Image (cartoon, rainbow, N blue to C red):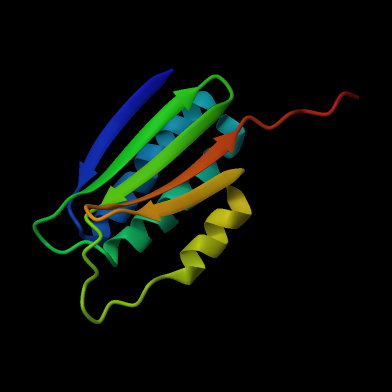
Length: 123
């Protein structure tokens, strides 16, 4: 099992950088889930921008296991005034991820999604 951690500033360009990171990891470990990984991370980091003020950090933690890639996005959970939540982000994540969830604590917010290796049906 391998784990990677990337920190991003709460800027729109960080969404693209995090999505590219997810795409690169998936391409190496689960090529058939490359697009799913990119879209899931893009949605979760975009959602995280609504809870992260300037000067704070968004952290993407990627864990690779033999049959699964897990993406966790952590932010300080300090909602920006006037920034609405993004329910459309979670619709996308729920469609593409095999398992997903989120939880808040007093100190932060963590969302996660897991993409499993797709089983090929015997012919």
